[in-house]
Amino acid sequence: EIPVELETPDAFIVIPMDSMLIQQVLTNLLENAAVHGVTTTQVTVSLEKRGRWARFTVEDNGVGIPACDLARVWDRGFTGENGRRYARSTGIGLYLVRELCAKMGLGVSCASEPGSWTRVSITFPDSGR
Image (cartoon, rainbow, N blue to C red):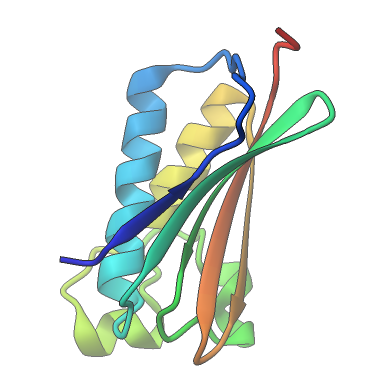
């Protein structure tokens, strides 16, 4: 029920990746935005090229993550205060994202402004084609 806006570059980008693993990563990120964002009304999925690297980002306009929880979002079983109050969660979503990204040699990061937004970025090499 939450609209997802897609922002992609005009130029074609070739990115070597495991499509099934990236699909799982994207699914987990979208589910987290919808469930743990609590007040999320919009999600933006974007892809941008940066030199020989590309960055894939999922950003929501939900409740955000408190600064004290940001380092822990990748921990297996961690649901944070929002997860405990609003969602039945196992806390495996972002843990699985981190593990799948590590398996593919990708960088992953999370930033948030409590009460405003959360952004998760996946960085991967661009083949240069």
